[in-house]
Image (tube, rainbow, N blue to C red):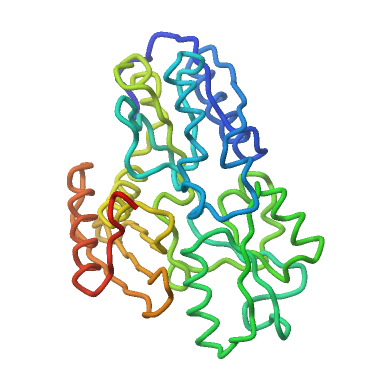
Length: 320
């Protein structure tokens, strides 16, 4: 949504993780801001989420581990903005911070990556599939159960994108499941053997979208970022993130939420909740509405979250 007049040039420092994908994202934003006349530098940082690789995120503090250090840099003035993969951003930002921009979405789907197997049905006996996501675990398990493949093991997979691909190439897994967006952004689309359509593997809230976080009370940054905003994407992810927030916003809960525009211009929101203990089947819910504001998108998200709960989904208590 471009502004009526260009924002005054600013000196902007971007806080970013130092993985290759995070740096690509930061460089992408840097180039767009420089095209608007701003002077932009990067502040590379290693987050706690990058350092703890031997345990699942749900057991060590959640996805907020990827953004805490970046927020500290915003808070103490070392950086002005932080560029995030939106699916890694906690549903509730700390007081004093705000999401100032959501950019146009890349491919939101999951990707099947394997050197030898074309899909789940092609896995060898006792095959091993790697993923870091509880959402993907429950969706994969449901698909494998439908194929009567109880022999296949789903094992944890942590590390940045290059680390995960290396583990696959070393033979630790027969296949891994990754976000298609990251592979495409790094020019690694050739590694994708198959794409899971959203009806088969419903994406995580915000998957494929980039969000830019700032310290609250920086109207000059909001104005500078305005040309980067893609409101159709922002409305989609606002609905998705509201479902997750209403369900507790915890990465210890398998939850998928995905919104897209229908042919008649409405926003269709689909969600699925998985039992963390694996005792009950997936609980789906969906709704659609005419949406033209963030408030309306969030109202749609609340509607779907309520439908999930009525169907048996259990939200995670806030203290969890």
